[in-house]
Image 1 (cartoon, rainbow, N blue to C red):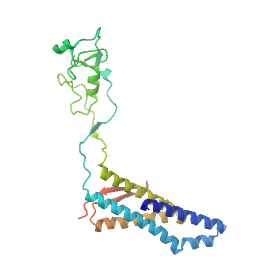
Image 2 (image 1 turned 135 degrees about the vertical axis):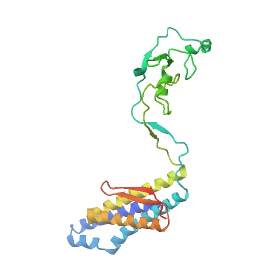
Image 3 (image 1 turned 180 degrees about the horizontal axis):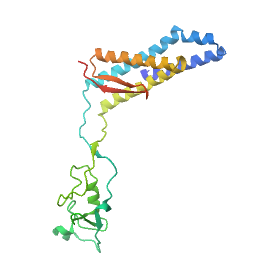
Length: 247
């Protein structure tokens, strides 16, 4: 059975056993204390934690051996809303569509796509420099991620300030994506384990229990020279994996 599925079943069994015993003993305080100090009950928790530690260690070791995540083609995206093309000029009236013969006249075609004006590709005159460009082409150009997309494509006059850009989130390669998915699933189970421990032993003991488990795992990663460590944010109850060079 998959280790994560097995941990889920074991945690469900701990919860079910605990509350069934409470019901059968009419919520006896003595029985509650007996269960919480029962070595078998405690070992069940410990084995779940150990299984999750082993799974995370195994997956991070595999991920480390695959090397750093590679961004094959760095894609950028603009920050903020797209430009409204109508703020940069006005439409030029077009009484009738032109033919392919008009391509011989540069003033009758778009300098971006080199196509003649049509009703679906109307001419648009830029106010600042008076150049006429196909409206849809200019809209795509101004809102593209090209480093000079704030300039007129004809004369390079600045039409506006260049919007800030940032790297676009890229999906990891398939092999690494599978491993990352396993680590995230193990973190989710670790969270379930913490919540159940808090439910039975109290919030302070639950957090301390999982905190110690993460510290133990980080030490194992250090000893194995696995290039990751588990970063924790206990205020927001979040865990994350960070790259590190231990030696």
